[in-house]
Image (tube, rainbow, N blue to C red):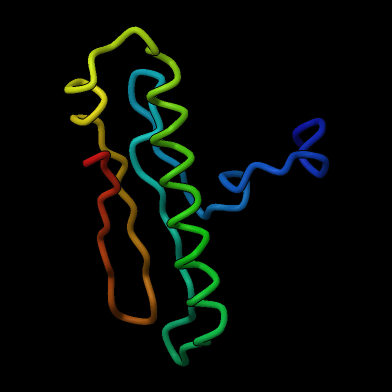
Length: 96
């Protein structure tokens, strides 16, 4: 058990997977439904969780280097994948 995890409001603690590289959060993984049946409400909730998590990860990555140029900040990306039954969807969150 991670101390304080129940008191933390960070969404990333509830993601099914979080991949980091060089101290940056670069990919978020979510598995929404078992293979046999899709739970639509759960899948929709997981989509919102991915949107919130990737947006927060991108913001946190930008905050680490506040002196960086705007073009550098625009080049950062956070990727996510969601599995629903036998389908996988890949998403990319960027500043534009």
